[in-house]
Image (cartoon, rainbow, N blue to C red; front, side, top):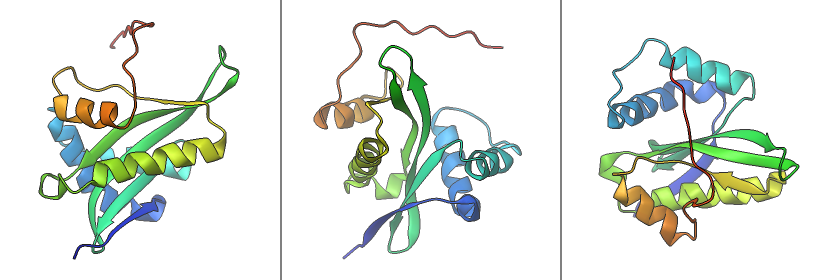
Length: 148
């Protein structure tokens, strides 16, 4: 039987996290980058991100990365669940849901009033996961980006 554990990553875990992040970036059609390792190290060393690793029998099987931020409207801390990834061979075992539960619990404990995310329009598997957990699609606000 597989043992799944969720651990909060530290800067010491970047070499375990790195291949997962590159696989996640590949899912979004991004080429591997020599900047990824430094990016992850900086986010963790500067406490700019919270990362949870899912381990199956001690082997990294997924991760989620959250960026805590704030809302002037709600006058509270809110969390951006920016990244969620489970390796293809580990999917279908509830790992993504367990990672999300970890994030939801940690956000509540930290005093955040909301966790938000965005996903690709065609990522129906992720959408089903989110909606199945009670997350609702935003119908009030429209998102705009400017890319440099």
